[in-house]
Structure formats: structure tokens, C-alpha cells
Length: 210
Image (cartoon, rainbow, N blue to C red):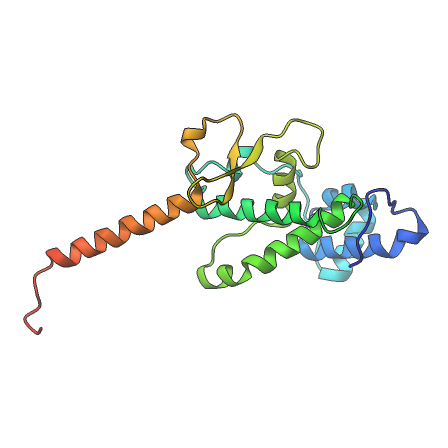
């Protein structure tokens, strides 16, 4: 898929093929109709037709925004450290994608390219551990919360951990002390479980067969 520059328009015949490729990619990624329309200026009916042709299904509907900003950063309830890391990986891919050209890139092209890169990077871990990954609609919502796509103030930012040096997501409005590095948290939990297993084995009586 050829890069699309920020000043390109889908109505420009010179960019018609690139925007159609972008729409195809967004459809195959499962983007909602309103999101594709926002990123390509295609009509909703045209996008619905693309879904029928390319996927043989109805296009997903619903609002673009998915959850609050803390859903991607705060490890509470159903939000795990592994989920927080997924968001940080995608944002890193998006930032890196913006550096591949000397001119600003069209936001839809940049979103899809970063999302595909993110999927490739996390594929092996996803297959081996079944860790939940972002879908493209969640990826768009995350970019919005980070201030990449809207004029409103960002609600999330990336902060570098002084221990492991990963840049993880934190909610700007929440106290930093409550937002530990997810990688360090996972390492600490793994160490705790290993110590518990070791202690349990030491307490177990020896088998009469050994």
C-alpha cells in the first residue's frame, strides 16, 4: 500500500487508487463504517458495499469512542498489565510510522500501517499465550485519548520506566504512584509465584518412592 500524504484528497484522481486500497485495508481490519468514512471521505453506503464484497458480511456499526482513557492504562478490574503493554506497543508503532517519510502522512494510512505493524510484532506472543490484542477500533480510540487525532487535550501519555526503560501508558489525571510499570509488575508477579512454588515444594513431605 503506497503512502498517502496528509494533503491528499480522496476526490483527487491522482490519489483514487491509494484511498481505495486504504478503504479495503480498513474493511479487512474490521474498522467501523463511521471510522472508515472519517478517514477516507467515502460514503457510508459505499463502505457497506465494500464489506459485502470483501468480507461477505454487514459492516460493524456503533460509536467510535470505546471506553475511557484509563481503560488503556489503569490496571484495575479487567484491565491487566499485559493489556497496558499492548497499548504501549501500538503507540510506539504509530509514532515510528510517522517517521518514515519527510512529509506528514494521512492519518488513516498511518493508522492502518501502524496497526498492521503492531499485529505482526505481537503475532507470535498472541499465538503462544492468547494474550488479548487491540482491534483497529480500539487502536483509533487510543490514538484519540493520546491526543494524536483530535484537538482536545490528551488524556494519556507514555512515561519511561527508570528500571526496565519501557515507555508505558499512564493517565494524566491520575497520581503517578498508582500507575506502576506493567512490565515490572508482571516480572514481580512472576517472581512471587516462583517463590511460592519453591516454598511449597520445600514444605511438602518427601515421597516414599524417592
